[in-house]
Length: 253
Image (cartoon, rainbow, N blue to C red):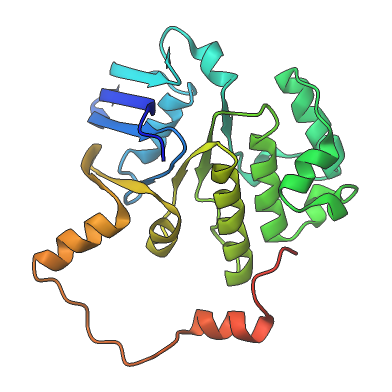
């Protein structure tokens, strides 16, 4: 994995009237990694990401994305990133090819919609209206739209929320494939097993501050070294394992 930072955040502060949402956050994201920004609701994660994505202004501090300043060179950054939209961002009556053509027009780029859909295993749904997709298919399509402009970095906001175990694991593999193709991934999630499975490094945010940055295994080792011990587990499997076993191994559907 490359060690060159592609995102650098230094002493980032965001103040609102009488409230400081982000209180001096600093971290780096390395090129080619999957980086998780974790923390409880209201911790400052979304505000921080929106500033990095040039969607929200900062009060102070410095944010550089792929060598460009969010303050002075936002247009250059927008050309280099992909941001996952929530479901409300799509016209439900349009089919997937129509939606991709629409987004390509907004980006001002030429694409081959079927090639984009192939990356997320949705070619068989090309003429399907967005509203008729399953939950997992909608999430995969939302990730497809982040790839339209061949971004250097994509931002995924809780990408597997509400998905069943198979769809969730399918999406995990898609995220790995995107990273393996050379795109840096920054994600937020409330599922710690997901962060542990996917992320090369994670930063925990609480109260508008970064309270720790490490690899998932590094954090776990630190906790165990302090004497933490989970209650002994006597089960050799859990209910998710049963779900996967009974419904088949994860397949894209």
